[in-house]
Image 1: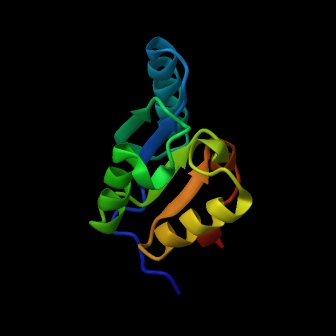
Image 2 (image 1 turned 90 degrees about the vertical axis):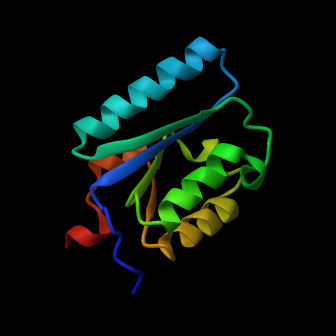
Length: 119
């Protein structure tokens, strides 16, 4: 059984896209609004501009993992899997890494789906 997140109702929104800075900011705001509407408090929004950089080499992603490890957030929400992973295997690896810290890695589309711990 994974550890219980310290703040399960609190999320970090993680966006990584090479859209122009205005597009990146609009995307981050839109995602924050959707996450808030789903009932989660947004503690942080991280918006990084280069999806070609490996996720482990992104300063923002490393900060997300630090917040997860410290118990500041219970969920990491991204717009879609491609913002953090280039393959299903990489998504599974990142999901497992965060799950071991008691944190869920989710996409915006999963917010309307029942959570695993809701049963």
